[in-house]
Length: 132
Image 1 (cartoon, one colour):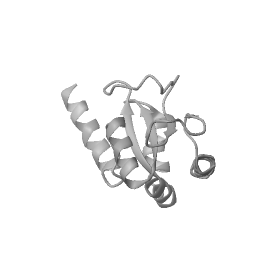
Image 2 (spheres, one colour; image 1 turned 120 degrees about the vertical axis):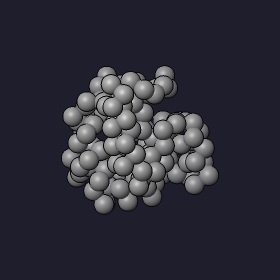
Image 3 (cartoon, helix red, strand yellow; image 1 turned 60 degrees about the vertical axis):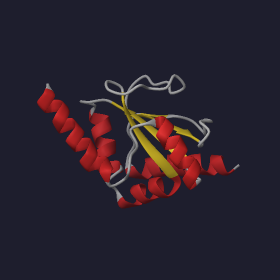
Image 4 (cartoon, one colour; image 1 turned 180 degrees about the horizontal axis):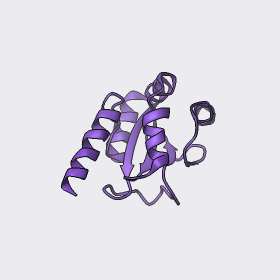
């Protein structure tokens, strides 16, 4: 058990370290305020194949990474290890929520995995809604 937690932590750090994923929603909001960005919340859990796909395929794509890092402060919350704020409803994982720096929801949540093209389109729609 300890070995698997260590490996999971190491994997999460290696995957999200380059992208500066926060592990705290409150810290992400503060950073978003300073940087004039939005917040992208990814709710995930260990052993979720769709989460693995998003982490290792979609978020590793250079264009997705650039779009996320230029516009959002991303925060990664694990259903088994992190406290999930009440405002972030989810049925399964991954689930994505989008807020401004004050915590006001923007657009809609995204439930489940998406391919690179579809996820890019969904994030772009969220950004357009935020501009209004």
